View 1 (cartoon, rainbow, N blue to C red):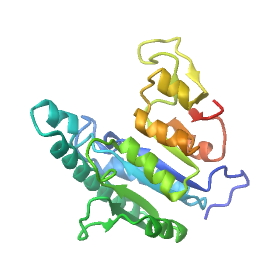
View 2: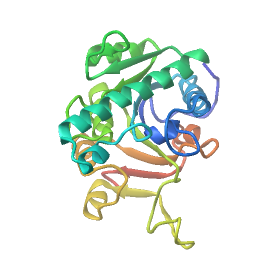
View 3: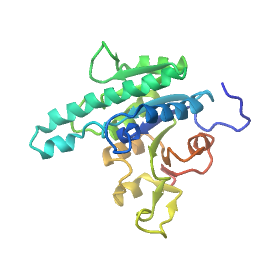
Length: 244
């Protein structure tokens, strides 16, 4: 464990990653270098003694909407996406274990040869033993996003916060890519997110967090030091909660 005099705000976090965070320059596939970079960020947090769980998407490999738009059955397309999340989870597990972080992959869709079946109490036990737990397979049901899976798993394991890791350092009042005068919003409440249809997490995920008083913190995963600053309670990104 790394010694640091700064207090830690969160004891247990769920980190929501996009599949694209593992991709190469073209946004597709799995880049081992990217996986290693993410693994090192996770290790830096884990070494503080925080319990870390992860949910990762599959946009770098497959999107259910793509299949549906080309005539594929929606449920089938979604199941394919769930399988792709397990591939990403295994890639990240490999990167973490290569740098000495004990990791378990748990899947909502049973595939015992490569991942443990998701059992809530077992997942909590892994965390208590100091292992990083990666949840694959989404919720195990079609028609639900990995955002919803993140909110659901975070609630089940008693996480203190869902950290939505993106390439933007929070939520802005307008698109910062096209508006130089865009201003980052430090805090919002759940109802504002839903009413303004801010596309940070889907409405089902936001509602689940709201009903369970689970804060959402949106930050730039790639901005040096921001993840560590966030877990110490410093003002980083945008916090979504009841008081925003």
